[in-house]
Length: 174
Image (cartoon, rainbow, N blue to C red):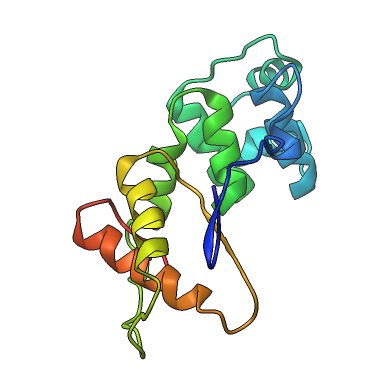
């Protein structure tokens, strides 16, 4: 959903964006191989650092084994030094954890709450109702606010974040 200040713009179909490393027929194996190569490790070096056998790593990368144990994924991710989105990709590819769970774990401690508004939101009640309503109803997870510079996009986003948090809509990461 895109909200243009001064009105609501109808939904337009958008291409689904996926991370390039998540694509491919072997999912986990491809993600593991790319992460290993990015870190500059051989299969043998990764095996030594993680405690996972070279054969297991090779089988995972080649797609002979496609559902690694949770502990195997944890050991490999730690040995590769994966954090943030790279860790999320490997966890997701393993099939053991949902995106929501992974993101919640990543941001549980470090998320900052939205700051207090310096100015009141004036004349944007309709936009506030539409955007906050979409978030609280669960119809949308990502929204874009577009408009001219100085039109009040940031102030509207801040008001929506406060309303969303106040009504129990979940944690707002600012």
